Length: 175
Image (cartoon, rainbow, N blue to C red):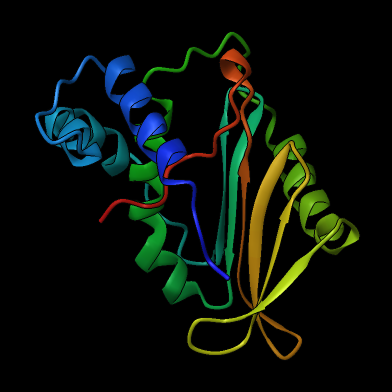
């Protein structure tokens, strides 16, 4: 069953709008993006998807914020900029006090996550259109994998944050 705590969602949107100093008569997250669109697009367009890659691990300083792996390179390229827009929105107000993680460590941490994906408690649900969705939330990261048989279609993990005692996840991709 797919559900969300709407009060928590709207509270998170309000928190993000406030941190980005954006007022919105409708309370819409889209107003934050529209207000800062030039900055977001400049950042997003400074990255290009590796044509050989089928996934993306995003770090802010030494913190791995998200990991997305797709079953095909073309699907990864299709979602690449959308994922970056969501991350740009999420990290706009964050300060990183740590320098970037070395590439070898970043690779290790991404592979380690994938290796440990099914070691935690997984909830399984029928996929919306097909396959099986396996979801997890271990307090540090949350995510899901969409599987058709034993084949991974999409695997994603989002880092949880305990800022001000609140737990949240980075925003989904923005079209």
